[in-house]
Amino acid sequence: FDQYKTELNNESNPLRLSFPDSDRRPETEKLVDSMYWVQDLISAPANDLSPGMLQKATEAWVETVNDKVNIEIIVGDELLSYNGMLLTKFGCGMIHAVGRAANQVQDREPRLMKLRYQPYKNAKASSIAIVGKGVTYDTGGLSIKPTSSMLNMKKDMGGAALALGLFRILVECDFSQSVDCWIPVAENAIDGSSFRPGDVLRSVTGSTTEIGNTDAEGRLILADALALASAENPKMIIDFATLTGAQRVALGLQIPAFFSNTIDNSSAIMRAAKLERDPMWQLPLWEGYRKKLDSKIADLRNVQSDNGMGGAITAALYLSEFVKDGIEWIHVDFNAFDNSNGLGQAQGLKAMKRFLLDKYHS
Image (cartoon, rainbow, N blue to C red; front, side, top):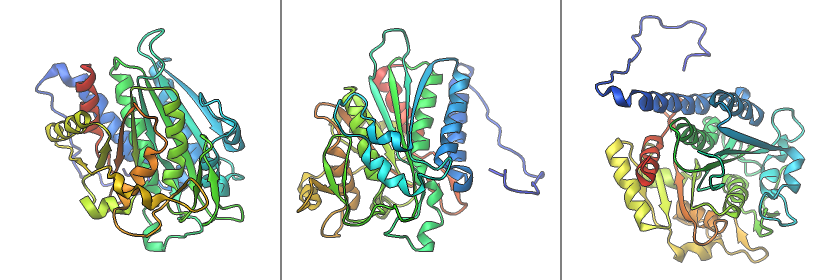
């Protein structure tokens, strides 16, 4: 990643791939291309990767796959009336609220991207849904971060990048199942229209969330996207997000945490992570912590009321409220970044690709 260097180091010897098994060369090249795409998206500074620029990067890739993918974009105030297959009278109020402080700036308006891949005509609309948190920059909002915590916040769209990267691999490898990819995108900026601590926001389902902290914004945009994905009744939903500091406290910077509502999927992900040498580790969806999200005035709080421990778990429990019963669900909370060199990392991409290909025998 040297596009911002005015003087390049031409003495370095780039790594080159060797293919002892020529049959796997096309698949491996697609994986490597996707990994570098993910890493470049995360590494790009926010002034060069606004919500609109992320949309353009996505559309540029879609144009390369010869009509395999359909894409729909809902931008700005259009979010307030978009409800997909839910057929409610509510729109994506939480995506809009998180991004509305940048809503009047061209290319920085909040938006929702929906990509659809179907392997053959009349295939089931959505066997798998992939969802990715796309906060292109996170100031923390009115619960503003200190400078030291804000420096790396270009990477807060890492979940969107990883979701797009996984979707790209599946499409380019002619995956056997239909896949939808939902990417809610916003910049958590600050101006007179910023949402506030104490506000109550309404999701696309109609449920309400009391805001305890505007720096817990990722779960809000994911909630709308997860509800929309659930409404299409996929067999499985996988979401990716740079969601909590608690995940890093629990597992450090190099190991993504995942949560799953099925034992079989949990075991399969652990196996895939080991085989790919792409570490992931399961944390529990402990229902005993659910009461920490109770609100006296709304259906939920976006952060636990006691400011206690277990923040990665309570964040996952909040998201689970927007996934329909009966759908297999996997939530991945990860760092997406190498703090030592300031570059993005496609953590979990190889493991989750292996998990899906093994599960569906592609």
